[in-house]
Image (cartoon, rainbow, N blue to C red; front, top):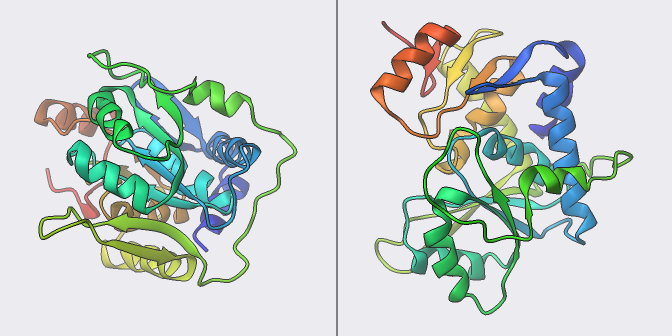
Length: 263
């Protein structure tokens, strides 16, 4: 399971920077604790092995943490395509039998309309990103940080019972009908993450800039790959040339979309 990558990096490189997002900085120890608190908060809502937790998020720390915190609870992560309309999102929420939804405030118009189409509404948790000051409303009962604050610090990770257990559920865009769902298992995600490290020539302590959407096939398993080498995730909610060049200078980015950067 790729969950081992996070516990390993937190043990070996506890004080190194793991995640960067604007002014926010998290070490590997902090990142592990935040993911574990997310798992504990999900579990406290009666959600566990085999249940689905959906996220409608930009490339922010919360999207990254979900790739570990959701499966740490035993649940299956469903990362929704932020570019789809309310009808497609509503279908995915219903088909996946989503029990809990974590959603970015910017995307509230689509999510609000989608929830109105759902016969069974999930628990909704809002993400109010510090790097976003545009329009949007909160739809849930708690925001993400308050949700983490409800976590039981004694929570123990629910490791998969079998390496073939589901870790994530992804859907097509539904261009030829209703979206089709595909399941990743822990073993496959683990092996694909290792393959990414090798194919993309990612040495230990690389700096990876997130321009690839994490919702797209779980970022081709890159959230897990970058973690396995104790590298740094630089989050970027909007792909704009000025932001990318500034991050190259500020964060000394070494990899972009998996490939080494060429400046």
